[in-house]
Amino acid sequence: MSEKLPRVPAERVIALLKKKGFSCVRQSGSHKIFRNNAGIRVTVPDHAGKILHPKIVKQICRDAGISPEELG
Image 1 (cartoon, rainbow, N blue to C red):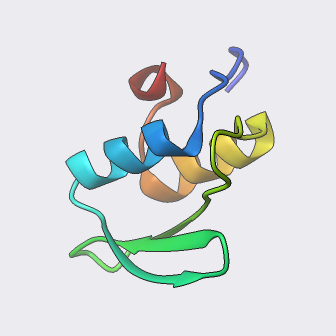
Image 2: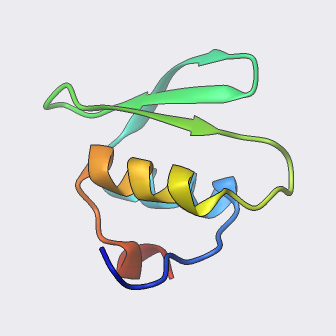
Image 3: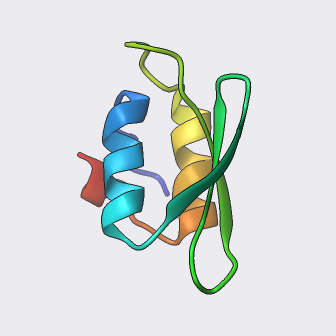
């Protein structure tokens, strides 16, 4: 991943995860834990209106198996 990662809010990441078949199974404070039918787990920090750090976006993309272009 040498390209620049998009700067996105948590709401956009959550919407894409739901579209890809993930559902929120629980929440611990401001962190929402999503899981799909294959058992893949992804944690998204959901702080209202905040932009996610690029390292967090990179980890979410890696865990969920999505490309950064899908977020942009």
